[in-house]
Image (tube, rainbow, N blue to C red; front, side, top):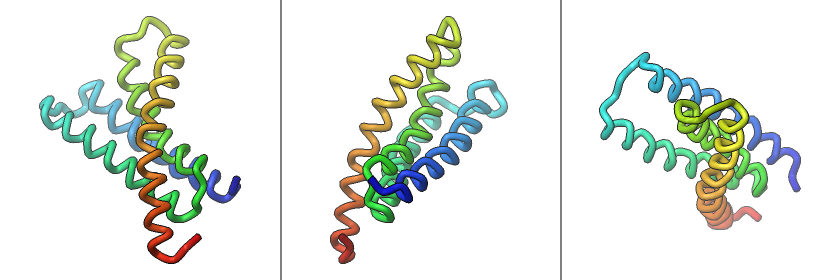
Length: 126
């Protein structure tokens, strides 16, 4: 395990969490209002951007855990905003959001890791 890769992934994931959570919360509480179609496009673009983010970390440091941590930040922000308005209490919100974030991060980090490793091999790296 590469500590540099894990640290980079955690840092990138943390920054992505703060940005995504802030933007999604602002939209959810009504700071700005978007049409449902626009929200859907934003979710798909966000998922694609998370895969690209994970690929960038995998290319740079070749660390699977760091790649997953980079994808976990925006994934947790998305699932937390999904469960906040509908759950009955804070423990339930945290459990469901963390579980959903784990699943989403894994689904997005895996193709990102594969793409990053392929790009690194094509570029002549190890």
